[in-house]
Amino acid sequence: MKSHYSSIRTRVLTVATAIFLAVSLMGCNDPIVADMEAEHQRLGNVVKQELRLGLSAFPPSSQSEVLFPAP
Image 1 (cartoon, rainbow, N blue to C red):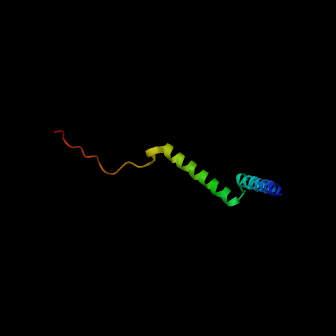
Image 2 (image 1 turned 180 degrees about the horizontal axis):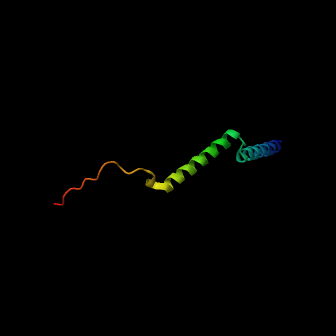
Image 3 (image 1 turned 60 degrees about the vertical axis):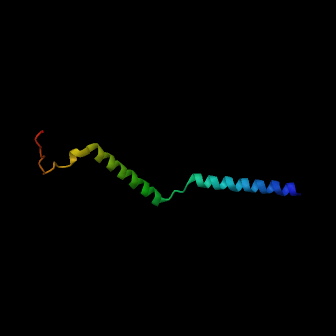
């Protein structure tokens, strides 16, 4: 009888674990998460574009360069 109970308990735990893993790996289709991911992707693209432009997008400095005489 003890072996039968142990076998049933093992099967139930295995099925419960499988269901839990299936739900966890499937994820949820939350629209808020999808919006956040889209915004993150958009901001990442903006940053990449600005990095491609480099420092050429910045106006030149208004300070003049000071040269010191060589010793």
